Length: 451
Ligand SMILES: C[C@H](O)[C@@H](O)CC(=O)C(=O)O
Ligand SMILES: [Mg+2]
Image 1 (cartoon, rainbow, N blue to C red):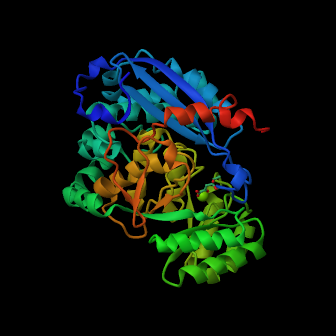
Image 2 (cartoon, rainbow, N blue to C red):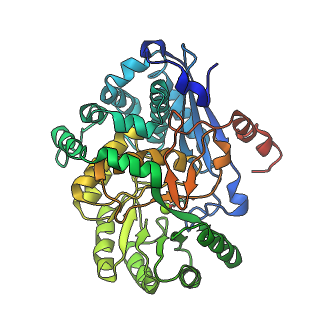
Image 3 (cartoon, rainbow, N blue to C red):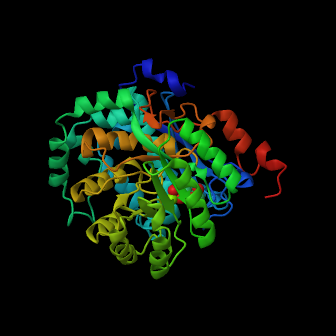
C-alpha cells in the first residue's frame, strides 16, 4: 500500500482511480492529563485524543483525517464516524470533489442522522474527521500540501465547496466569489512571503492551568529564548492565582510582548466582566471563551463592557458551526475569530467562516494545539492570508508544543512562525506505531493504566 510522503512524485491525476473502498476509524488517546498538559479551568484532566480516520482507495492511495477530543467519549465519536462511513465508501474522489457542496450536504443533511445535530456536537465532529480525510486524499492526489491546493484553486471552485445554506443573509455565493477575486491581487507576493517568513504564531504551552509557578517560569524563559513574543495564560478557576500567574508572566515577557488569557467558558456574563476587569492591569489582548460558547448575546455584552479597557473577546474552539459564527459577527460579540479545523465541518465550513470574518473585518486567530490541530489548521490560516485577508495585523495562529512527534509530517516552527508544510496532504497522518500504542483501550500505553 502506498502511504505517506512519497506520493507527490506519482502521477495520480487520473482521479477516477481513487474509489474509496474502505473507511477505518480508531480511538487514539494520549495520557496528557498525567502531566497536566492542556489543563484549563473547565478541563482539568484532558487526555488529548482523536477519532482517527483512514480512507483506502482502489488505487492504493490513502487519505488520513481526524477530529480532536479529550479522552472519554472518543468512542462515541468513533461510532458516529462509523455511521457516516456508508455515505463515503464506494464514492470516487472525482465524484466527491466535483460537487463538494453536495457531498458536504449529503453528510450533514442525511434525513435521519441530522436529528443528532444538525451540524453540531458529536455528529459534526465526526463529519469533520471524515471530510478532513477526503481533503487529505484530494491534496495527496494533486501532490500538494492542502494549503497550496486551496491557493491554486480558482475562486469559483473554492466557493463551490461551501454550503451557503443559512448564511446567505450575510454572505451570498456571489459576494464570496467577489471577495476571493479581489484578493487575487498580490497573491503570489504573499505566498512567497509565507515561504520565506512563515505565519506568526503564539504559544499556549507555557501556562496550562495545572502547571506550578516554577514550571511556568521555566517554560516562559525557554520560550523567550526561542523567540516567542506572544503568550496565552489559562485563567478562571481562582482570581488570586490568576493575578499571581499573570503578574509573573507579564513581568517575564515585558511590556511589549503580547499576552492573552483564556477562561474556557468558566464564568457567567457579569462574573466574566468583573473578573477580567481585575486582570486588566496585565493588558491582555483578549479574553478567550469567557462564558458559554453558545451565548452570543452574553459575548456581546462582555465585548461591550471590556472594550474601554482595550480587551477584546475571542472565541471559536467550541463554536458549533458557520451559523453561530455568523451571529457572533452580526452581534459584534467577538473581536477575534478562532476557527477550528475539527469542530467545524472541515475545510468546507471553515472557508465560509474565513470569508464571513473577512467581510466583517474581524481578524482570524485559529485555535490549534490539542493533538493534530496545529498540523491541520496551519493550512487554513496560510490560505486565509494568501487568498482572503491579505492582512497580518492582530493575527496569529495558536501553537502548543505537544505530541507533534506522532505525525509523519509534523509542523515546522521557526522563530515563532509556522513554516508552510511541503508534503502532499493535510498533515494529519499519524505514525502507525503511535496509533497502535495509543489505541484505546488495547494499546500498550493504556493496557496497564487504570483509567
Ligand atoms: C482542553 C484544551 O487543552 C483547551 O484548554 C485548549 C484551549 O482552550 C486552547 O488551546 O485555547
Ligand atoms: Mg482556548
